[in-house]
Image (cartoon, rainbow, N blue to C red; front, side):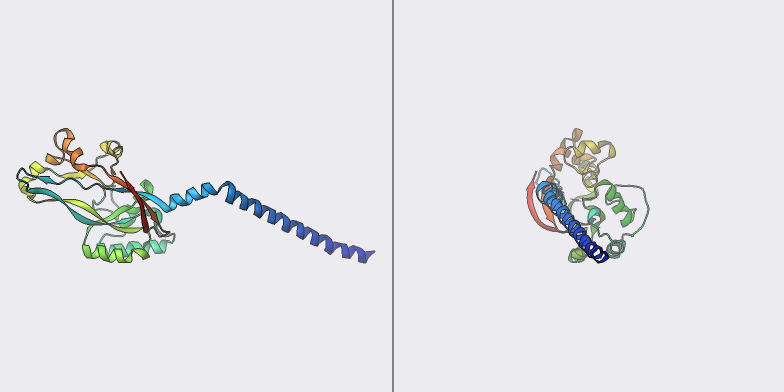
Length: 254
């Protein structure tokens, strides 16, 4: 009798194990069905959102001529080093290495506290600039060094693959052919003031990047020339890899 009881115990345990395995398989299959058929559109949309991003394309500002066709103001390329905060590595050591390399090449300090200011205004360190970008536009390129030397830009572009989130871009800047001679008439550009931030962003401008006319022909009477010279920013949709590097441009639109 005792032997029969002992023989039943392993059999019962085996049946229990089979039942648990069957339940686990059912749970796995149920989850698989949920992911593949019920929620796949949600996950697909999330994946596309991370992979495809819209990037604002700054419009080149209009060139200014005098009545004889002499070019008074033109645009020349200037190189900026940008960091997209959301695309930085998870490891703090890797982030510090990226900051260190940029600092070594550009001379911008890694850490330096300072009041918030418009992009490209010196006074803060790379870490502080990126932290500000993280709170405002974490998925947008944030300028950390402006007007960098062409050779520095070349070196950083060669090393971009090893620095996720880092990008070197060329932006047009104003070059005044006659300098101070006509500065009072031509005027100058400056950052978008906080009081006009909403107004210009509704028109597609970026307050953290774009500049507007402040005086002279650059702004015109009641801002008339500002609208003509500034044009309209465009948008392009690009595909990025896990390191944040652009793989291809999907489309461009206004």
